[in-house]
Each structure stands twice: as C-alpha cells, then as structure tokens.
Length: 303
Image (cartoon, rainbow, N blue to C red):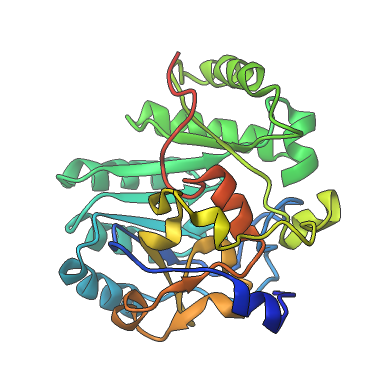
C-alpha cells in the first residue's frame, strides 16, 4: 500500500497518456500458484485482493480498445494460466492484435501448449510468452520461487520452444547489476539444455514493493520522481504514458502499482485514457531510472 504523504503527492509531476499503445489485463488478479519472495504485489494462492477477470470484462475492454488505437495486448497476474477462460480470451484478442502472456512457466502442460500453438497458428498476429526464471541453478531459483519450480519452469520452456515459440525469459537482476553479462551467458547455457539455443532474455530491476521489501528493504525517502527529473527526459520510457491496466476492479495506471489506491484511475477504459498519471509512488523512481520495465524489449537477446 502507498505511504505517500499529501505534501509529496502535491509536489509530484504528472504525465499524460500520449498514446494507448499497450493494453494490459490483470486477468488472474493477485492469485498465483506460487508465492515468490520478490513479488512486488505479493501474489499467492491465498491472495484474493484482486480476483480473476471474466470474459465479459475482457471483451468489453477489447471492444473499446480498437477505437483507442491499441497496438498490443498483455495478460498478467498472478498466474494467467490459472484462468480457465484464458485461451478464449486470447483467441478474441488475437483477432485484434498481438498478445503477450506473462507466466511463471510451471503450468505448461502438453495439452495447454498444443492449444497455444493452435491459437498462434490461426492468427495473423503474434502470440508471445514471457516466462520468469530467477537463477540459473535449482538453488538460486527455488530459494525465491519455491521448491521444484526451476525444474518445472525449464520443462515448460522446453515444451513451448518445441512447439515453435520463442519465449522471452525474464529474471530479476541481483545486486548492482555488475554481473549482467555473466548472468546472460549462464542463462544461454542453461536454456540450451532444453533446446532453446538462441534465447530472448530480459533483465529486470528489483522493485522494492510487496514481498520484496522483506528481502531488500524499502525505497529511501529521496527515491522519488521530481519535476526536475523530467526536464529533457523521454517520457516514452514510462509505461504509463503509453499503456493502461484493466482489472476486475477498474482501470489502473500500470501493473506495478496494483497495490496502490492512488494508481486507480477510473471504472472504464475510455475515461482512464483521458486522465494523467501522477508519479507520486516511489516505484515510479525505478521506472524513471530503468525504463521499459514491463514492455517486451529484451537485453542480450540471441548470441
């Protein structure tokens, strides 16, 4: 939850939506089959703060999206593949544009992978998969994501690669990031063992929110975006100038700030596109620093 004071909120800069390029769906709410120690919205099997979106809610937002100029769609959670209606939602979405599903990769059964492959083959638009893997060893990953998750995620990655997908593998960059190139090389070696020889890799910064606070602490008081920091800054680096998040409980500024009431903009998508976003939360500081945290741009792809 937000700890922002009224004084800090009043002094924070606001940014408009310049174009609704991306539409995000919090399709499984905060419900996940895992309980990761670094999850910035503390998703878990028993976290019902946000419940699943239903097909009516997704369809309504999709119907609005075409007139609003949306270019691509993202499905996140929680774990999206816990939503039984996800294939039908993806089929409807892929009739309009490219779609990406952000997943922990542990629920890629052979039947589900075959269904995803059929959806991808039937659409003129791309179906992307983003799979989270936090470490190149069982010990490193499972300490964060839980026992057995490394083996299950690798098995799932192997299955989707064999089905013709080129998933984006994401990992939270540990420490100060100085070992990034070594980490990328290690990931290439590990993923090669399941047939993914030229992987697409994305390194993510730590977000000191939710469960991650217990591991790395909170943001320092001065780690927040000011008006001066936006002078000469490319606002397109901020997701909230190009995207909105639709949930079962309204439209939010971005996926990172789901736990922050200040990020809730409106009940309906059209209204939310007319509103600016005030960068009052400290997680906005990480987006200002890193840029493109949520979008699909990769670092160290191929090799």
